[in-house]
Length: 327
Image 1 (tube, rainbow, N blue to C red):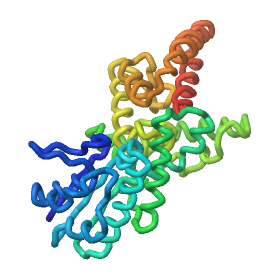
Image 2: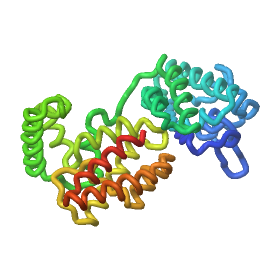
Image 3: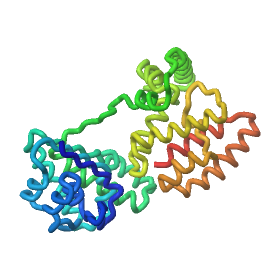
């Protein structure tokens, strides 16, 4: 089987790959090299330019006969740094590639889906929280998603099992009895709050389905998982799967090192003083200005209120609000 695996986030605007003395300068040039080495690259050498795409006949010649697997990741990042002419050339190539792969019985093209960025761009722009680079990537995601949506079939390899995947990666085992006990406690507490203070909680929080979600997500609160995957995951710099796993691992390490005994790990339990958390949620996501909120609002103001009332509630609320504000 011939395989080409592309991580386009590592591409430059004019150089995509270096293979000894040979350089590739476009997505199609890199794919051709990975599929056929130097001889394969020769077929597209004349158009190995990000602004000069191959025609359909050349795309057909570029793909070898027999089984072919093409894996394209982070095309949005690469697309955003190209000129308008380069973007048009790349989108045209992707369309031709899909047509050629679709006409073959033993060819598969897998492209990571940029639809999350597209779906979230409107809300993010309203909050004015996107950097110029992120706006460019979100717009590129929308354009690429339009092209992909015409012929591609969506497949989510994780689906609704994100919590189970995270648990398998971070823990040798999870105490199911403890999860059931904590879920029961939260279910009773939410029911009591809903009765005493109607409208305070979302309706789903008091449902048996949500109680089951607490069991599935244990020891993390479902809301923390939703925030990471649906809100932070919409940011290009925060990969929905790898980013969530990395963040949860860092949160878990802080909880372990501080020897905290928590029924569930929630957004209120994030330690914003942790260099690991700051690196992951502020620096990596280009949210450095939020350091002022960490210092003034969370550490100083909320901390002072906690001291006055002998509680940690203010810091926990401030921590959760800060996390929800990042996107």
